[in-house]
Image (cartoon, rainbow, N blue to C red; front, top):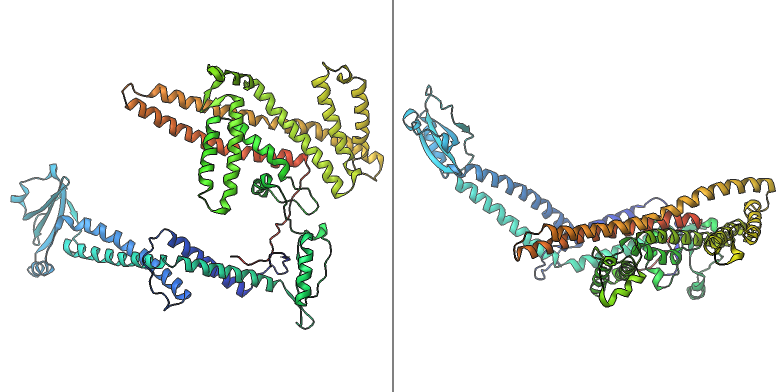
Amino acid sequence: MGLIHVSEKHQHIGEKEKNLLDLIAQLKGAISFLEGKQASEQPNLKEFSLDDFLARLAAIRKENEQLENQEKRVEKELKDVRPWGDFSASDLNRLASLGLTLKYYSVAEKRFNPNWFQEFPIEEIARIDGTVYFVAVYQEGDAIIHDAIEMKPPVASFSEKTEELALIRQQLDHIVAEYGSMASQKELLEKEMLKAQNSLVIQKVWDDTLLEADEKVMLLEGWAPTEQRKVIEEFAEVNGVYYLAEEGKVEDNPPILLKNNRFAKLFEPIGALFSLPVYNEIDLTSFFAPFFMMFFGFCLADAGYGVILLLVATIFKSKVKADLRPIMSLIQWLGLATIIFGIITGTLFGVDLLKLNLGWASSLHNIMLDSQKLFRLALMVGAVQILFGMAIKAFNLAKQNNWWYAVTTIGWFVFISFTAACYALGGIVPALKPWGHLHLIVAAVTGIAIFFFNSPGKNPFLNFGLGIWDSYNMATGLLGDVLSYIRLFALSLSGAILGGVYNSLAFGMAPDIIIVKQIVIVLILVVGHSINLFMGGLGALVHPMRLTFVEFYKNANFTGGGTLYNPFKKNN
């Protein structure tokens, strides 16, 4: 256990597996529901089983829902009968036996006519919230009041409805008390759920075990890391298990166990959002992690926001559960990158530091970049990541096939890198003059690689045709990919502008009243910068993902589609 990733042989869910899934779903629902309930003192629940517990919880939840609906209905009825107060049903019956009928009316106080007392046999009952409620005692043939609203006769007296509502609330209180009693058993439920989950894991293994030789031999197939082979062999020998072991093949799609250092491991959840690499593919997590961190800082680019992220993650890192601590560590790194780029862009809570006299810290102006330099920096880091992706693609092709398949990609990498170097350094180093002798020699050599090694082993004319098509795609695709990195500059600029707008609103709209002015300023600053931090943080996550999964993965020729290595083990 804990070593073998069992290969799935059955796609359908068996009856036992289905029952376990249902039980786990019920337990999860019960635990989630009782999570927010106040636990009472330990009740004696030994007299009924888990099934009884879950059934009782479902029953009282349904009863609680019905009582809450009744409570709302009776509250409305109580409001309706409130003007009519208490009355005796026997008195009403006696009036009815004498041929007298009671009609119930309401009218706005300002429209109530006092002469109605002389004109009609009416009796005022109550005046509530500007409305007059009165009853009229009619015999057949009496005139009817048309200027008031006739209401439905009350279904019960005010006291009767009050008692009914009290009884319902008493029942609800009993249910709340029972919820508290059940909530004290949450730990028991969690143990039962863990037990059910482990049973489900074992059941899946049984379902994936093939019975051979008249069900006398059980055959189980699975995957394990090669470094665990010795441990598995020792277990098999001790327990008398016959086994066959062989290296994994790409066509079998073996599960993937990622092996990254502590820093890159923090970015594995981000990479998993797209896909895991397949068996013979390079894992790109450690290669995109530094870029992702840099891009996040570039997009948010406010030293103040970076300090907030860093402080919040540091404070909560020791308080959250162990499985959430890597996320806090990731936020710490992203906050650090935001501080660095906040200094580079000269932005602190929306304040443009380049326009301020920083006194002793004025030397920081030398490392701050204006908008034009930031624009060029965004394009440069984009070009660097794309070239880096092309280098990885070359290694990937060599790993999956052989180095001949990587020659074209190497040719493009060398040609683009050397051309960029010539344009950057041509004015300083004469030998690197753009399209000079050295540049033309490199272009000719790389041209052979680009046009004649697209598909090693095939017709040269076919390779040349593929080379032309590849050149067209490279020329158009490369330009679009590099321009896509402008989003880093755009997000950085828009976040700084919005931060500045909130600062202007805070100090420009605050009324000139002592204390009130300070309160309004703080309120606008806190709310405004909170919104800007949230929106900016969201953009700083989404757009670097886009650059990673589209531009970088495409140029690195990453396909993905791998399955996570998930060994059969008991959960504790």
